[in-house]
Image (cartoon, rainbow, N blue to C red; front, side, top):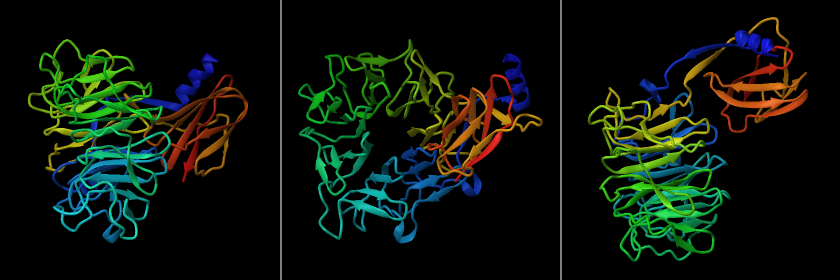
Amino acid sequence: MIKNLLTTFLFLFTLIISNAQWVELGTGANALAPGDLIRTIASDKYGNIYAAGPITNSVQNVLKWDGTSWTQLGTGVNGLNANNSIAAIIVDDSGYVYASGWFTDSTSSSSGNAYVAKWDGTIWMQLGKDNNTPFNFIHAPVLSLALDKSGNLYASGTFMYPAKWDGSKWSGVGSLNPNSSVYCITTDIFGNLYAAGAFTNSLGSTYVAKWDGATWSELNNGMFYANSTIDCITTDKFGNVYAAGNFTDNAGKYYVAKWNGKIWSELKSDSSIFNYTIHQIAVDSSGNVYAVGYFTNGPTNSSGTYYVAKWDGTTWNNLGNLNANGSILSITIDAAENIYVGGWFQDSNQTRYIAKYSQSSGTTVISTPTSLTTLNAYPNPTNSSFTIITPEAGQITVYNTLGETVTIQAVQAGNTIISLDKSAAGVYTVIMTGQANSYTSIKIVKN
């Protein structure tokens, strides 16, 4: 078996080791339009990236990166054409895109009602206003959006309460009734909703509130009383909650706080990492935490530059030495664990851009061998999954055109279904490592 594995490796792979680095998403004719800043970015399950904010010089729209170029979601009368900045975008499992912010349903940004807009693949529509009936419920800037495991949409902002969209109207979630703005909301794997912002408790401290479907409660064990605004919250796959923002600890240091279901703790190393506000945080599937914002001078960082901080469970590190020349306001992680950030920073052409960091430490270049056993798979092309016919037990590995691993699956002799449901359309290379034989690679096309 070892001999066959080695033979397969020598025939099928040339491994080029390179340091992972930040790259600009779209350059030249494919670059983002020059503008003020990138305030928010999001990703979908297919690997598409979305960006918004005041990144154009007149009306605002949501832009989509499909792996090759940036395109605007809707043009002309079908465009969003927001009259003010877009603060949040989110994409559901069906591919519908939602956007919100300071824009209103008026021709003037100084009047009208703020709203949540939905892109259905053809046009943008306003949630909460049908057939010119009066606008319902939301009337002030919508700064944060969230989706729960059932696909319900939630919104919050300066209208001072979390709201839920039931498919036809907005309604308040429970009786939280905060005394100030709700800057951020998120959900966890159990369907709970969390809210935070500038609102305070009876002691005058900002806090994270949790909605369990029946009641609101304060996440606190007597140890976490934030002394300023909570600007961002998120959760991980284990149900932990993370919060950050403009608040500091007793030593006056900014930090990320973690709630494990019982107590709050401070994610910190021996020295101070954050010298100013943390604007947004994200967590990958391994539990690594990423923070971006207005802070500078991190580990191994050049003086005066902004960076992405990564918490690996023990310490904070400067992820890839981005060394941005402006603050970083937004971060998202795609299904392949790639990191994307945007904000005030510019490239050498004074253009705002999305920076991408691949978690892969190298690129696998796949060569096609000769005189090896041939594999068969169907349907090819496919819209979702394919069935591969294997004469023995072994392991199937699927790579995309960049040489990145898409999926690894153990197989037995016979027919095995391999899913590409979460992968973008394109060409994929399938390789089998057998126990007794070596196999040629095959190409699968996903439409």
